[in-house]
Length: 180
Image 1 (cartoon, rainbow, N blue to C red):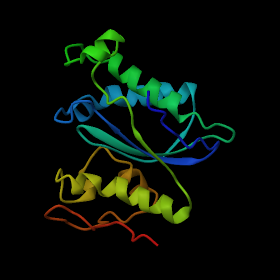
Image 2 (tube, rainbow, N blue to C red):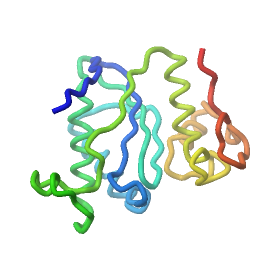
Image 3 (spheres, rainbow, N blue to C red):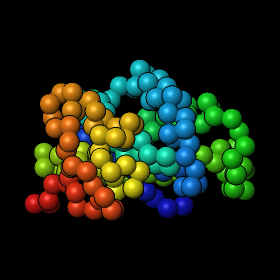
Image 4 (cartoon, rainbow, N blue to C red):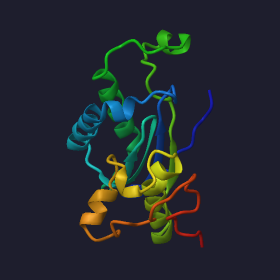
């Protein structure tokens, strides 16, 4: 078995990409209430801060900060995925290996994780999260995508309402801070 390495830093901030197993499905946005419930139940039992997040039809991006002394984001993702999956009717395609383990076929088993290094890295990942619906061609304006913390950040004065403008095309390069 492959040994996956995770950078567990207590109290750290982490960027995640989490995908559905079948990327053509729209389960996350079609079942947004169930996803919110899964996050809420998990956060009540295992607190963490959602610094930024966007939910797209088949994947999500999130930036979390863990509580002091706690680095266990893996348990939180396991609980979120399991809670969401239990709230959906069965019927998805399940591989033989998943069936043998009694698993559902909703989520990819793994997820992408990046440890945030500094304030610039944090800001670039927050921007990436918020521009993502534009990059995927789901909207032409960041503010038009409803499943995003962008709206909360506009209310708090962190972003202007028209941040990144009106983008036609693929949106590549728009709204993101350059790497330093």
